[in-house]
Image (cartoon, rainbow over all chains, first blue to last red; front, side):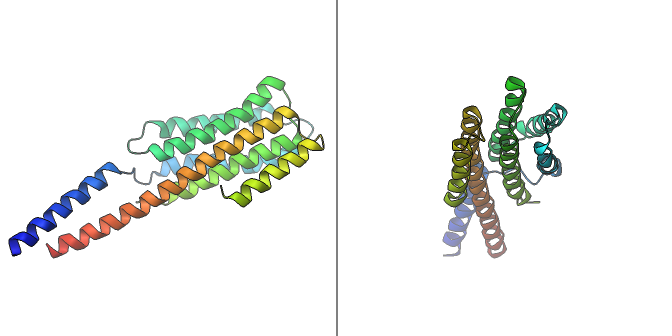
Length: 135
Length: 68
């Protein structure tokens, strides 16, 4: 009887380990978290500047640099597919914003504000998700 | 992104476009941005579920190994 229980328990343990193995998740990474926080904070800080006559292209470039750096950092971390997917989408949002200024050299105050809101909202969601990773 | 947030944003963009305060390109760009936001929100939900599930399995394994 004891032997049967032991066998069942071990097989349960092994199958649980197999499940855990297939859904391996990268642990909390302070640099990854920091890079998303930096991007989000920057988007928040520059939003009021949308109301100015000209939104300085330097601000667009800085935002793009933070986003590129975030995505490049996350891109090859193992067992991190969800975070990679989310940061890729966030980086695309920033690329859309930059492309608007690159193509037209101008964007309306409303577009600027709403796009930065999309970026900020998305970064906040990502921050929340990766902040919950196991330590 | 939940349905309420999504429809609020769509309405806001639509109103601004119809009142001429957003160009056609800008309106299109913002709508495309919402699609990307949706991807982020769905993936975030999935990741949260995985984190929760993993914690539960780890907990069960610890309890089991204490018994075995």
